[in-house]
Amino acid sequence: MAARKTTCSLVVAMTILSLVTRASSAQQGPSAAVSHASTPEFDVASIKRADATYFNNLWTYPGGRIVAKGAMLKYLIAEAYGLETFQVVGGPAWIDNESFRFDIEAKPSAEVAVRYSHLTGSPKNPPPDEIRQMLQNLLKERFQLKLTLQQREGPVIALVKSGTQLHLSPSKNEAVFPWAGSLGGGMPKEDGLLGTNVTMSHLASLISSWLSRPVVDQTGLPGSYEFKVVLSQEDIAAAGSREGSIIESLRQLGLLLKKSTGQVPTLVIEQASLPTAN
Image 1 (tube, rainbow, N blue to C red):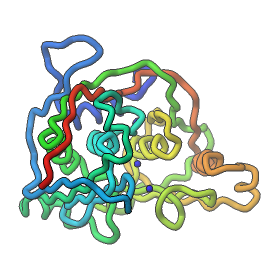
Image 2 (cartoon, one colour):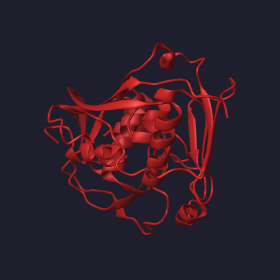
Image 3 (cartoon, rainbow, N blue to C red):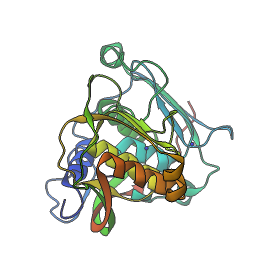
Image 4 (tube, rainbow, N blue to C red):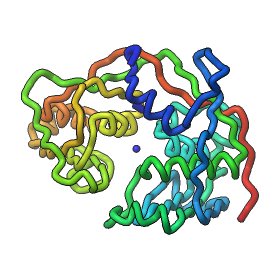
């Protein structure tokens, strides 16, 4: 082939902290070692060196099973902790070498799987939070990971209300998998934007992925929404690019992206080892 309030969103920081669990209470500075207060684990998991067919893919299937293909460790860490790859730094040199990619298949227990049987249809990304935590612990164990969460000052983009009428409909079914992207599925293209059961914090995270820049939710809008924007040929021509089309689609929803600065959550890899084959 999806980061999120000094000025940077407290919602994002709290979400990430909930995923990485508690930092050491003895450390009061801006950074703290990532710990795992609870250890939800997959029932069965395998990690193998990958071939060249896929690059950085991870899917979630009904029942909470996850499959990663051709995934670099930095990508896997970003997916596990709800970040973008530019928010994961450090580690040994091989982490940034595209020759070191991995295939992962992991299944939760039957007790856990029944809670995610509603993830029907095509495989989805990202995984639900509980499955993310399982992925965190799998990576920690197999790659001997030691991570530190830091808040680093930097440029961010705020997702805000534009002041015009909002064209967002409350979700009809909050049990469906949250998703947003192109009208035909997948990453946004130039033709518009479609969303189902998406919170504004989730949308900010997706936009961050689409634009490869930190985006934080400052809309103040609670709940989850559905929306659909179909851009006209005139809109597409005026936008001039995929990024411009995303911005125009948001404008038609009553939302804007605004440049700002703030604390950017960053995971520092202090230690990582190649996993043994299994």
